[in-house]
Image (cartoon, rainbow, N blue to C red; front, side, top):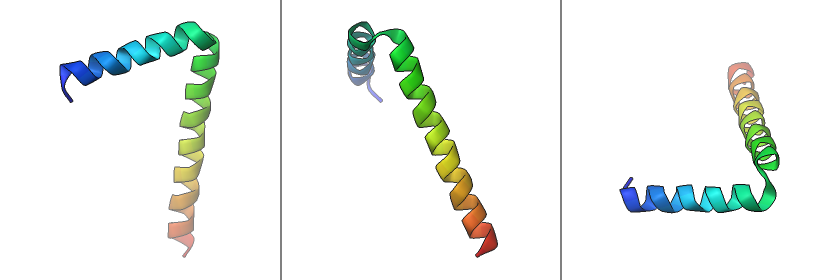
Length: 50
């Protein structure tokens, strides 16, 4: 990852945080992490039981 793209991502995140608010941002991040964890868990269990 180049420094330019990292700075661009950081800038976009900063703009998004100021636009929607950091609480909303944190909630969205937490929800997506939980969703990924659930999907991963379901995938593992389905592989185990298949």
